Image 1 (cartoon, helix red, strand yellow):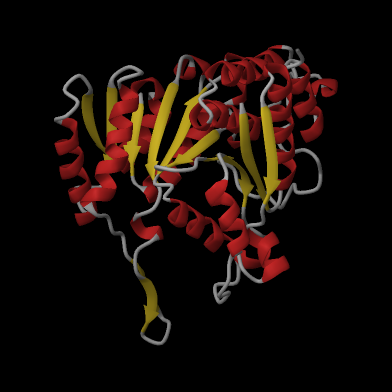
Image 2 (cartoon, rainbow, N blue to C red; image 1 turned 180 degrees about the horizontal axis):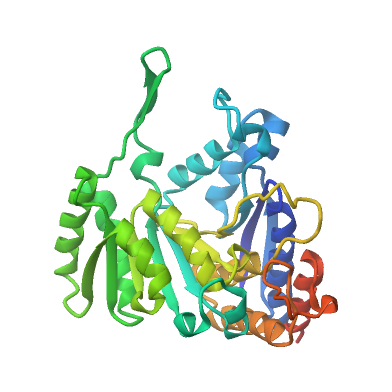
Length: 358
């Protein structure tokens, strides 16, 4: 197989963890006799520093022609406390999603048994948790009209959805549920938000085409509580952009750390694969970031964009074996983890890579 994979490291620890994700793809190519060609592109703060644009046209052009994209993270602390900044790293991320039509964000939340003690939730509550979030990615408050009035003293952001936007993400969620436990939970705030009422109406209509899949509705506040109280109650979760952003970060505690969670952003063309964590500039350059989310994102890339399911399972099994052998990064280490078993970014990547050798 000959494929082009675009590596977009972005900012902060994104540059460190994508290096390990790429390393794993190289190992897979060697083991299974595939040919992967790699290219790189700028986005976020790194792109602003180099070109003044958070998503240069050259980067976007490369994204459009790639077979898959391995992405890191965007963000930089210099923008966090400067609301006046006209150009921001996150603008590149939002434009990329919009331009590439990446409307469905898939976030699997699956706990490795070896990390039961790494979560702040009781092991007996967690064991067996397996959730797949479908977060709509190109609508909602992140893309609605926004601005300020009254000489800047009043600000507004518009939460907006079209029926078409809800339909297409709903179909993907129901189709996926058919391959799992045939249950969809749609999360909204239809008791107070008009956009959520449209969301619920549309999901109900789509559900009629999938009579074999059970549909349940939950308000987002109730779902947030249930996620911690009884994660086994969830199978496929369908929700909007804002609610999905918050709930999946909450769900990272099920997996023990945000450093364990991969995601896929897909539409009708190229797919983009990334860890759900941010740029984490507090640990950038220290070599301590957990690369497993990027490595598991590479597994999703192999599975979804390249159709290489056996290769993807090989990566997941290598991660599982690495954890079973006791290796940890500091975010998933417990008080009982021997110091010599706590690894840095590159060392953890190497442990997984060793288990992929032909």
